[in-house]
Image 1: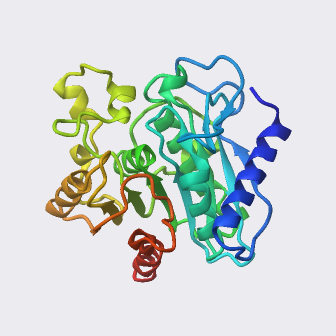
Image 2 (image 1 turned 45 degrees about the vertical axis):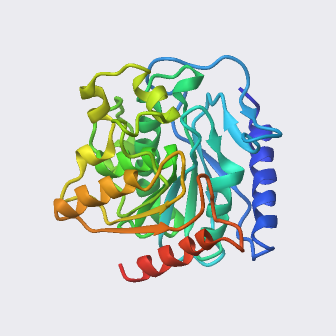
Image 3 (image 1 turned 180 degrees about the horizontal axis):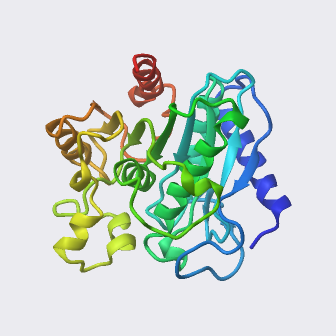
Length: 310
């Protein structure tokens, strides 16, 4: 495991990179971290060697080999009372921080949200498939328990996720009471149910024709049963009591095409839940905030308008 100073140093470096992308908007407090578990995390498996932060290539700024699941906290100077737990994607074999969750966390913080960037365990690192979902549940419980400390309304704590992180966020929103671990400390009396969910180009279905994602392979393996595919597909759990959910896709996404979000949107609406779907003409996959010249960069303002109406 890398040392705590290295962990925090990497977080500050990533935040600085994200700040550059955001054009120097006003910063809030420096990032801090909250460990999710006292001692060894629950569940089977573990990692060998230090935590890794990607260099050049597609994995630039992405973290992997996570042995210490935690949240990086972004406190705004003027809190608006709302909080978001945010999860970057990466197919459950890495977590895209610099490209996805960190710039979104900075953008949200600059608009008054208290943001908790989730660094979760990965099945590809040797953890059992349920580990990231246990981490996400635990994160929601910690944030809700400590809401007063952070100036957060306990009924305004949402979850946001990109790609595989969208799968993680969606599963947490739709299955908050799933028993994934045993715990008995003060956090375990709180609910893990988010008050709203924001899913960006998420992996929704593990069934055909959407059976080619890295997420599917990491969670259920190469040749799963239909029962396993259904058990880890988000639309399986769409229900009337699902949190209000907003979904974003790009029509030209080759990894998670809009069919994923369409399936979830139809399932949610068909069961009487509150849902909103946006499909942009272009954007591909892994667009984070989107570049200034891209139509996809409209999603943060659309999200903010949606939140204003809540």
